[in-house]
Amino acid sequence: MIIGKEIYKLAKKLWPLNRSLTGYGLRETLKEISYFLPSLKIKSIPSGKKVFDWTVPKEWCVTEAYIITPSGKKICDFSKNNLHLVGYSLPFKGKLTLSELKKNLYTLPSQPNAIPYVTSYYEARWGFCISKIELDTLEEGEYEIVIDSKLINGELNYGELIVPGKSKKEIFLSTYVCHPSMANNELSGPSVLTYLAKWIQNLNKREFTYRIIFIPETIGSIAYLSINHKEMRKNIIAGFNVTCVGDDRAYSFIPSRNGKTITDEIAKHVLKWIDPNFLKYTWFDRGSDERQYCSPGIDLPIASICRTKYGEYPEYHTSLDNLKDVVTPKGLDGGYWALRKALELLEKNKKYKVTVLGEPQMSKRGLYPSISKKENQSSINLMMNFISLCDGKSSLLEIANELNIPAWDLYEIVDKLKEEKLLTTKYKS
Image (cartoon, rainbow, N blue to C red; front, side, top):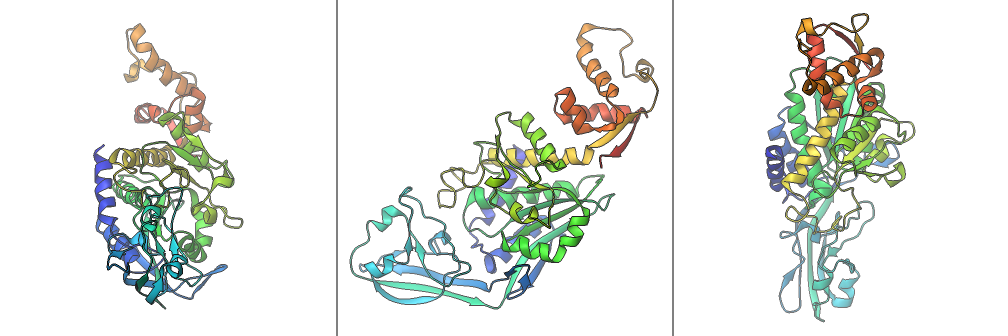
């Protein structure tokens, strides 16, 4: 669990930043990630730019926000919990009665101890979020409201990392960096992807080029596609939207719209062997940036491997989605390794063909014991069964599925046979 602990440290470091679609918190998050990934390029798109059917919003800046009760108590303090302020709230300073104030207060009666996460990106308003328990204690009288914020013609920022490989064909990895103070729904994705990117950069040999992006959800993916979709459609062969990979309650799979891409098949294979009880969702359960990547006319082969899926755990989009009770080093470790195993299999998913006619003589190559013993038979059978399926037509994934074993159980066999020049390879098209 060493890697899970390191990922958890990064998540804790990113926790206090006020992330949104735009602004200081988003830039600072990308800056922190760039310390781990020095080659990450932080780019910008100006407010007001047309991106497909959308327009890049103004940049939201917040200095402070709070409410003073009639008895002088400060509540809904943005500096203590940035979920208290409705995302993209307009500036407001004034005094209101309790009944007037309640029109701008948002709560979650079904979870009375939670601060809900509420945004109003594309309609002008202001508001505060408060737990039902605290709301019920509010006294009658005059309340002072302070929201020191502004919307300016600024920019939308995102991070992009291109890691070249032997082929120009690409594996695409995307995560979002636009939610404040939520652990599984937000911080697990960029934290895990940062460490996956470090691993990818350190690979001695990369068959594929990797396109890795850290963006604000929805508007970020739409804006990125508006710039890059032609190149992406030409080159991307597989990819994952990385989100909700930090708790340790479940593993989940959300397919691409097509449902039958190599990404879908590899994700299902990996999850079958990590957790046979993993939860399978349909395209109609989608809710993150796979909506954009798989949309008609874009049609990228993008799926999602999650721990517990967004919207399927009680703490989702509330202050209860934290780094204490929901996201753990163990959960992050599991999310990291599920995705890493999928990427490793994408790299190794070649079609194999044996180079000799008939069964190769294994003993002269030191691959078969000169004395036959019962205890050696299982590993020998696996090797010979694998060879029997290497006809140049079946990929490693297809062979593993036919043998009903995890693909990674064949990696060492492949390496040994390649070393003895008993296999030729090509990637599955």
